[in-house]
Amino acid sequence: MTIVALFNDSLDLRVHEFSGVVAPGELRDLMEFYQNHPHLVGADLISLIDERAVADPALAASLFTLREQFRGLQPSTQTAIVRRSVWVCSIPWALGLLGRFLERRHSRDGQGAEVRVVAAVAEASCLFEDYELRAVERREQFRQTFHSTASVRLSR
Image (cartoon, rainbow, N blue to C red; front, side, top):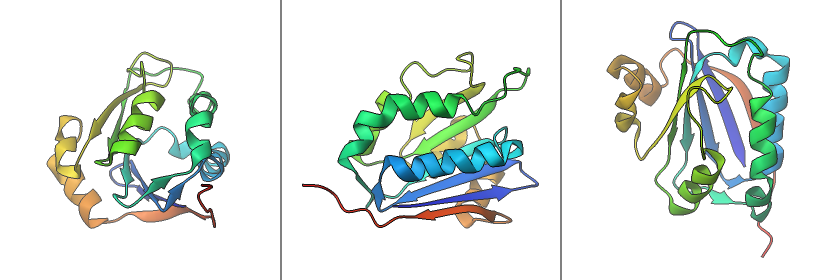
């Protein structure tokens, strides 16, 4: 799988791009990156799952553990500001896993983020402004902060 994390300083906005075989190991690598760079965790986030991505069989079994580990990244003190988080995904297997991963997520669940799942970037206007979405679509003024690639083969 490849995970690429991008950051736009002026918008205080992160983008995660997921492609290839989505496996728990790379998600743990991303989490470790944020443990070492906690100043980025408070930024809003748009996660993009490539339409050709496939799930590693181990991913479903590790969702609960990954969710709890990601929860631990959030600041222990809550602020009055709620972060925005959108998952852009249109593939059925990922929508099912996202449903489980995001179950019961809301702005008061200890992670301080309002979360939505949409099929296209343009549909993220439920939480983001048009100029932010244009910047995401064009990757304008985003710098790469993390890149993980792993040679993962699906076990059949």
